[in-house]
Amino acid sequence: MVHKKFTSMPRIIKSKWHDHRLFHKYFLHIEDFGVLNCIMCNDEVSTDHGSYYCSECDVIFHVKCAMKKKDSYEIVENENEESPDVSSITKVLEWNDAGEATVIEHIMHIHRLTLSDRVGEYDNKCCDGCLLPISDSFYYCTQCDFFLHKVCVELPKVKQAWHHPCQSSLVLTSNEVFRCVVCHYLSKAFAYKCEECKKSACLRCIIALTPGARTYLGHKHPVFLYTENRGGCVACGRNGIKWLLRCKDCDFSVGNVCYSLPITSQHKSDEHLLLLTYHDDNSYSENHFCDICEERRDPNLWFYHCATCDTSTHVNCVLSKYRFLKLGSIIEEYKDIHEHPLTVVKKIYYYPNCSFCSEPCLDLALECTGCNFIVHAKCL
Image (cartoon, rainbow, N blue to C red; front, side):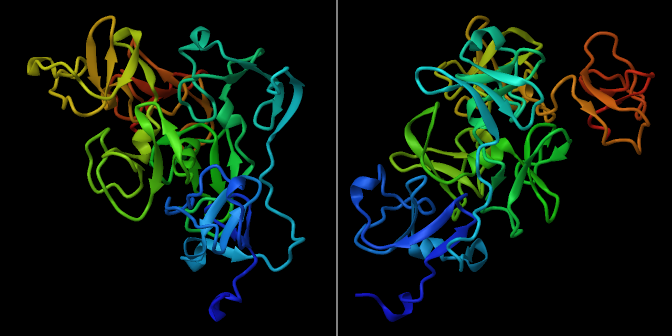
C-alpha cells in the first residue's frame, strides 16, 4: 500500500549529496548493505519502506531527506540519460598481486606515478593534491617532486557538493592560486571549481564535507557529518560552528577545518616532526605554554608536541595562515603587480625588504627570480 501523494515520486534523481544517480526502490534486502544509515541524517533506514539508493556505492537515503530541499536534486526523466563524468581520472599501467594499481597516469601530472608506502623516506613532503603531509600509501613521481595521497588520486573528475549554492557540478582543477570558499585559506593545490560562479573548494574541505561515516585517528568511534545544528569543536574550542563531524556514542565533535589538520607537521623551532596531540595529561599548569609564542595555551585543546624535546605549541603557531602555498610553486596570477612569474619562498637567512611595505621578509613571500622584486604573502 502506498499513500496517493507518494505514487508520483520520481524514480531517478540526481542529488547534490551524492556523485551518482539515485533510484527510488521498495523492499531492499538488508544483506545488500553493511550499514543501513541515511547518508544525510545518519539515522537508520527501514528496508520495509521506500528509499533512494545508489547501487554502485551501497549508499541509501530516506525519501524525506533526499527530497527535503527542492534545489538539492534534479529529476532524471530519461533513464538512458548520460550520467555525470564521475569516472576515475587515472589510467592504470601496472597492477600488483593484491590488485592495487602500482603505476598510473594521472590527468593532473605529465609523468607516471608509482605507488609507495615508504612514508619515512619522504616525511617532509606534502601531497600536491591537498598539501597535507603524505601518509600511508601514496603515489610519487620518479622524475620530479610530485606526490599524491591514494585518496586524492581516486577522486572523480566531477563532484557534487551539497554545500555549494550553484546547480552546476564542480570540476577538478589545478595549477592556479585560489581562496577556498569553505575554509577561506589561500591555496595552490587541486580544487573543485564551479564552472558557473568560478569559485573553488579545496580537496580538504570537499573530503571533510562528504557525508557518511568515517574513522578519525584521534577518536575510537566513527564520526558522522551533521549540517543542521551548530555546536562546539573539541580541537579549537570554538562554538557555533555550522558543519560538524560528530560521534553518536560520546561527546565528541570536530569542525570540518580542524578535521583536516595534519597529524604531523614541521616548524623551524624544532628539528623533529611535531605530532598532533589531543589532550595534555601534564598536571603542572606552568607547563601549559606554547614554546613558539610563549603564551598560555588551553591543555584541553589540540596542540602539536615533540616527544624528543618535550615541547608543545599552539596549532596556529605551527601552521601559518599560508600553510597551503607550497614552497617553490610558480604563480602567474599577479601580473598586474609584477610583470614576471613569482615563486613562493620562505626567507630565513638574509631577510630582504618587501617591495610593498619595505619590512623584512621573515617568513613566506613571493619572489621574482629574474629581478629583485619580493613581496610578503600577506601584502597581497
